[in-house]
Length: 291
Image 1 (cartoon, rainbow, N blue to C red):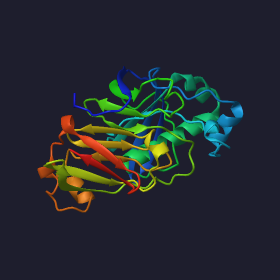
Image 2 (tube, helix red, strand yellow):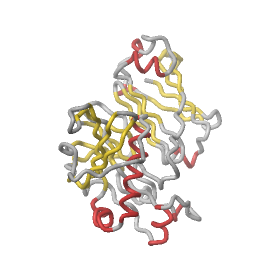
Image 3 (cartoon, one colour):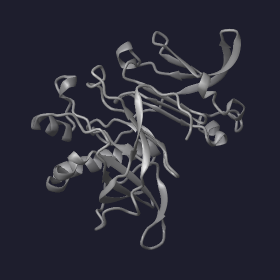
């Protein structure tokens, strides 16, 4: 298991039970979403029917207490094939089982969960998924995989905050922390920009990532989470603000994606997780991460 630098979270093993399957497309590529259930995923907060209905139609509540959200674990895509043997991608979207009965009896609510799943797969993968969907007569495309996820610790101080969930270990899967707000169209959130350089940290020159977070406030900072792995940085900011999932397992690809020379990042890896240190500079709108 990779080393982590994490805040206010705990690891749990989940073994999701398949619910139903949704078929979409990204261009010519078929994409299957397995909607599944596991009791270890945090349940949505208790809310009135009016609040839930507003969430389903994308209407914001009159206060933060009226905003209803749905925690979900979304896996990375795994390769499969369709009936014709053509390449396809499969994602698992795992919710708390308290949503199961309503999803099976309320078509509007089922459509709501499907849209949440589509949006979160898009946000994580960068794919643009068609809303012309099908529901194959199968519980899942392939087996819904067991895995380990990181969920928030329950406490008096944090009970009102939206849960952040991160999948931290699986043979082929790893996902971004998710806290799902009601859908407000299919526009993706903007990505955070970053740069890496060398800078003094005390008397020592160290590598430092500088991440632009111009919207950061002290209140928002208290509900933001940061996870660091030897080849990954996960910075999750509550919606609707953008988050950062920086996968450095392929330094050349990460360099190209950031507009850097092909092998620029290789000399900074692996990240120094045990000695990592983050500093928020709210006035500057930046986070400095020494690794």
